Length: 157
Image (cartoon, one colour):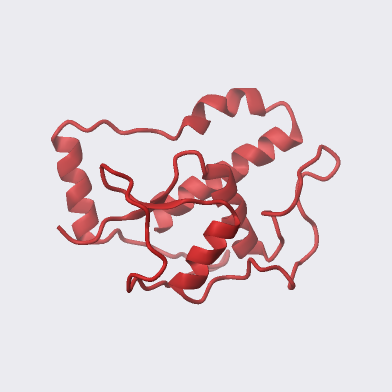
């Protein structure tokens, strides 16, 4: 079996979503404290240590700084080492460009075998919290960050 898919710690969806939103917008969601009056950062942050990563090591460092655990999607959730010869490509389309990401064949087939073998699909636990978070701006932005993070892992990664 080849290298496993990289994913995040099961409780890290909010931190991961904020990091993804930071990379996508140039606004520092990671360090922003959400309030009802100011639920999202509004200014570009060119001084942030959370610029789009250019190498896997930069990606790994930023995840660590943002308190996002990186693990392999194996039965042991093995931690991902910082320097293991893993490459990184950051792709960001815009509203006029459709980016179609296909999963790596070996990972798709390995996951398929898991499900055929009886493994059940686990939704992240934040899905259970969504109904209670919809009443406030902070709650809605929390759900948004978690969902953006999950989408990025499952669709883009």
